[in-house]
Length: 423
Image (cartoon, rainbow, N blue to C red; front, side):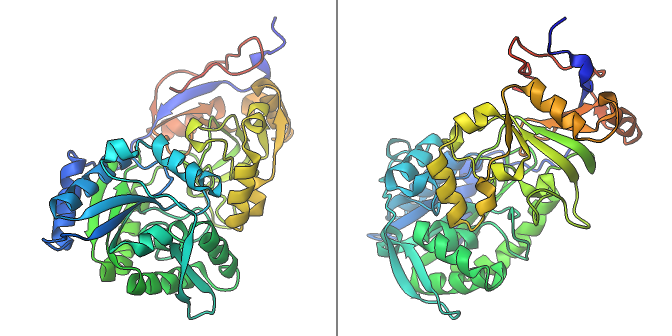
């Protein structure tokens, strides 16, 4: 018998969940019609900066392309600006490479990409700190802010992650992001975001915002444009819609959550804390927070994260390949800038999945492995189909969840690593 004996671990079965699935049939047409609703008919001879962040937003290349085409049709001269704070290793070339990984290149967009870490000090905020803004965007005649609306991974409020955060963190580049994350410790996230956004809208030629909403299947669910003065109120409304669409784990308490991959294209913290239940505490759910996960095991990084393992510190266990594939400089820079230093701390690593899972079972208490509660997911974006340990089978049946197969032993290769169950 192989030394990687699956009988020492729980069996797993696959289930399917159903989530709200509002979806746009023609993303490009929606972009154009929404922009037509808020932008002037004549933008002749005006340069317009179009912002693109580092997140893995569905159809971001298509959305950006149609923004550019619309602006050209109105006589403007558009260009793309990376609006991603300190991502891409906090270098101009690194941020251009992040855009390329998303399909946003000069050739594909049909316009220049102007990437720089240089910023302009716009003014002093009411609270007494400098407001910074990307130099290229500041020098443009107009700025169109484009971003996805979603719950933030660390801060809760009426407005969380979206257009206003991009004006604050994304367009503030590394220098601005660092300052803002510092002052958030002195004031609330909500106050700082509103304070900076007010100054940016007043002084940085913001022509409007294009808000992207995604459903639980990582598809473009809706697109809405807002004039600059409407961004704040509109974003608050849209966040409530997105919260209702978000995917979630099927069970609210589990000893183990196994995640195939984390990365900046998945979430700002690599794994979405709104899904794993660790928004306020890196290693445990606080009172009233769900789900309650005892231990998290991370098996790898996404290719699109380019070695940035920010958020790995939220896990207790990881495969050794995670450590080996990390870009420690990029990870540290991101975590320091974000004021989330523990997000870059390293978990205990293992040379094989089998070793990690055996340890996780021991850490689950004085129960046989067959009774350990565990869930296995591809990442925190893809939760429609997940693997669950056998002990969850009765709960799944009681709730009417679709069970796709009976519990079966985990399968390992000759090195003790799991054979894939996800694409």
